[in-house]
Amino acid sequence: MDLQQHVLVVPCPAQGHVKPLIKMAYNLAYHGIKVTFANTEHVGGKILAAMSESDKEQCPIRLVTYSDGLESSPEKRDGPGMMDDLKKVMPDNLEKLIKQINDSDNEPITCVIADLSVGYILEVARKLGLKQVAVWPAGPGSLALSLHVPKLIETGIIDENGSPIGNELIRLSEEVPALKSSELTWSCPGNPTVQKMLLDYSLDVKQAAENASIVLCNTYYNLDSSSCAMIPNVLPIGPLPAIKKLNPSSGTLSSQDSTCISWLDKQPANSVIYIAFGSTTVFSQKQFNELALGIELSGHSFLWVVRPNIVNGSFPEYPNNFLERTAARGKIVEWAPQEEILAHTSVSCFFSHCGWNSTMEGLSHGVPFLCWPYMWDQFFNKNYICEMWKVGLSLEHDEDGMISRHEIKTKIYDLLTDDGVKTNALKLMENAKKSVNEGGSSYENFKSFIKYLEA
Ligand code: UDX
Image (cartoon, rainbow, N blue to C red; front, side, top):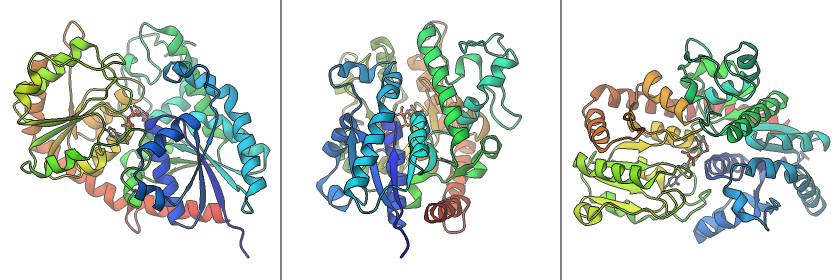
């Protein structure tokens, strides 16, 4: 009898990582692979709290937890040193977890699939004689950039701390959008300590990617074949959700307010701006006010995700009477079922921070983007959206470093009257669908991955 393959999937404990890895895990389970999904106790608790009872009953994977070692200093979970803290305890805790599972389960773990952000745990898999697979939930361009860090240092483009030496644009290849020095994924102007941490993180990612047998990536090959070609052993299997439908509440760390779907149902087709900036973006109160007033000035209906910590970690205050003035055409929620919203016919465009998941989700539904990146890979993703794929427009800061209400109003108008952008977005949507439908490149890659696991 064939041995039942049993994979342990380990995401980095953050929303933008857990959700795509859960999607991938569900797809593996639907293909007959046994999947155990390991979250930190903190994230695992949030996932269960946000999951509906029926989704829990139908969940095809086993959810387990391990300690992140931060029980006595929980505030560190939101701090910049979190990745370093995790690295200190994760290998041991994961090794213990694997041994525990194998002692109590007659189908032992055969493979570890680790998020590259915590890719050092593949070393544990190697030590235990298990298959080692990496997954990069962000775009291939940002991974190719991490792989290039030593070369960028060697050729004098950046220094050992990640700071650009000159001011010229940085290009990985002719086919990949150029980056301004401030757009590097580790760039953190004004905070050299955090920048160095992010650069070291990029080097960890590089090392883990180079050691993994396979690097799964949430993209499809033709979307960015040049970056894919720069990554050894890459296997593009995206866009992830379309391979098999995910239960709506799985993999989200906050409860989704689904009243916005019935609200959208009542709006005319193509009339609502969907505004959401992912799980970590924060604004100053002043910038938040400009954003609110810009949305109001546009005159359009809107559905806006305003996380309770969006203004420097706290509740925002809205400009005077903003809520009353916009009540008839605006809906504000704290967390939304984003993919259902992007699939809704009432949505006209996506005002986004350009996180990679949001980028793939918008692109999968043919929705044009208004781009306001915050940090990490989001500037690079914005360059893909605006310069390479031409499916969106970007906002420009004024001389005080603010995005003004007038800039927001103008760009919303420009975007919604740009037929070229909409046509491009629909084309990319079709290509994305083709890639995950039977015979498509991601579909075939996923099948070959299953074969690899079963071999
Ligand atoms: C972060 C980085 O921003 C991103 O660039 C990197 O690629 C992964 O880590 P995050 O900022 O959370 O992620 O953005 P994003 O990658 O877009 O992921 C957010 C996820 O949360 C998406 O899957 C989105 O569907 C989901 N979401 C967002 C909701 O379910 N509800 C919401 O209201 C908003």
